[in-house]
Length: 77
Image (tube, rainbow, N blue to C red):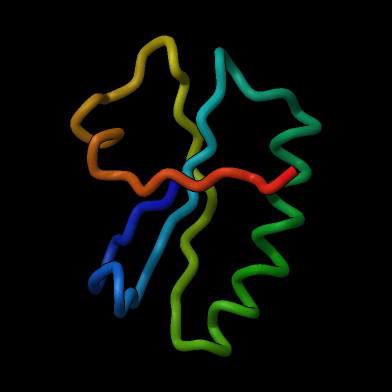
């Protein structure tokens, strides 16, 4: 899920990726997304977008107001 933290959907200035999990994320998942973020934030900066660190949402106790504001993203695979 993606949150536009600053700006608009058409012209975002800052964004944050939220990963929705069923319970606590594994250490492997956290490590993978940390590596992804380290590379993705540099690409985002080159396009004048601040990519904030990855957030984690537990589906068993999610804030529905936050969830409702997020943009759904799905992996093509």
